[in-house]
Structures are given as structure tokens and as C-alpha cells.
Image (cartoon, rainbow over all chains, first blue to last red; front, side, top):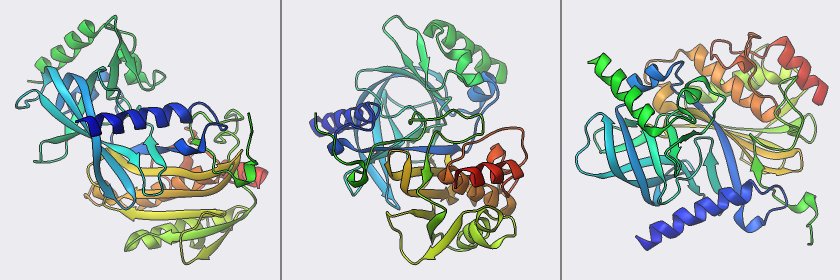
Length: 185
Length: 176
């Protein structure tokens, strides 16, 4: 577990250093890649409908995952606090994210919000990878930090869907999501 | 504080929030290759090799013949004035494609890497034309453009057009 925590801290520091500008230490080189998402939604309702699992969860730790064609992935462990849509056995949840340490020592991060912060609570819209019990964040619209006052903070507030949740109290967002889930039944 | 010479540094890359000029002409900040001569490594597999070739060099409206950039095919990926293109089945990741500037000095891109995720692109939901549009968009991004809606072309972000628009061409030609 300690190893996971150290890696998570390294990833956070790497990205934080990247944002410090071009004169940051070369020991913490980070490449921030941009992706084209497979699914991007036009409304919050579409986002709710597209998710297999919607949860409020606290990030616990991270560990290196698979590497596919030089692209590193990270397994992010969460403790589920509330399930808003879908079914998941138990409280432990694993979300795979693209990014991590590459073979050359450079950290790869994509525009999905970057590494999760241990201890931080999130509202997450997830899809299942298959039958392996692992999920992934659908896109940049699918992740919201929950700050200490219970307000949501999205990855890209300029996005219309993100704007529908960004800055709102978690309770309001939960009500919206659960209402839409009920409407879909 | 001692600053190392930029020429020998592999700087930290932030495609989104990098230094630069705003997007009136849909440039991606100030990023560009050093000049119009760019090494082109095609690591695509199967038909993706052909798709990359068509979008980079062989279609009449591919980036090389249509604009002032010149792609020189090379047999291996590299880090000096290179575009390195790949395809692969990266799994259910959420993303169709990924573009990264591998190394940069100030505004000058030294090498970039593009990837197409066959896990989604080969699931039956995407036509070959749409795959070409994705490849065209990826190359355009590395050359220094970002998406701009409303002008039909591969930088419009719709995956419906597999060619640079005349506007894309003009912007590229203005910076190389």
C-alpha cells in the first residue's frame, strides 16, 4: 500500500511541476497529452445515460498498471461512499486511467484531470472495461472533485455538460443524477 | 538560479496551457516544428499504415502535398524533428486517439507522437473515412493547429472530413 501511495504522490508532483512552467526541474518531466474521447455528451442527461456506474468515492491509492505500446496505465483504488447508478459489489473500486511513468522516466498525463489525489472525494461517471470488474472514466466530463464545502469542481468548466455540475453542491448533483436514473427506468 | 540552455533541454510540455498566442487562427499556442522539413515515422499496423500514409503524404490533399510542410519518411522513430505515428489496441480507455509532444524547446517541437486506438476504431462503429479524419486531425495538431469548429476540414473535430481545409492550409503555410 505504501508503494501505491508513493507512486500517487510522484504522479501528483510530476503534474504539479509540469504546470510550474518550462524552467521546472528536468527530473520531473511530464508530458501532457491530449486525447480525442470516444464519447462526448451534449447534455448532463446523456452523460448519466452513458455511464455504467456513477459513484461518490474517495481516492485511496494508485499503482502502476499495464503498459500498451509504451503507453502506461495506472490503477486507481477508491472507497465507494455512495452508488448513484449501476451495481458494484463491495466498497472497493478500481478505476484505470491512462498515464503514469513511461520507460524513459517521463510521466505521461492526459487531459482527463490528471492523477487522482489520495484522500480526495470525487463524483465519477464510469464505464466498465468488461467483465474484469475494472472501470474507466468516460471522458473529461465524467470527473468532479468534491471540495471541503461539498461543491463540485469539474475538469473543464467551459464544457456545457461540465458546467451543468461545476460549482453545484454535491447534494444537488446527486438529486439530478438519481432523478435522471429513475426517469430512464 | 541557473537556467540550462534551452537547446539541450527536453522541456516540460503542456499542450493545453503552454506559452503562447491565442487561437484566432486556431494555432495551438506557439508550438511548431523548427522548419517545414519534418521526419515522418509511420509505425501504424495493417491498414492504419496506409491511413497514416494517405493523410500525411499520398492523398492529393494530404498535409505534405497540400501545404508547405515536407515529410521525409524514416525507418525508425526518432526525437529530432520527428512525427512518430502509431496504432494499436490500447483497450477500453475512453479515448480514440492521443497526441503528445514528446520534447520541445520553447515553442519549437522536436518530436511528437500520435496514436490511434483500434479498440474503438475497429469495433464497427467507425468508417475508414472517419479513421482517416482522426489521422488527419492528429497530424494537424502536431504541426501546430488545434480544433476549430465550423470550417469543414479535419480540424473541425467532427471526424467527418479527412482533409485539411483551405484555412488549415493557410495557417500552416503562414507558420512554416
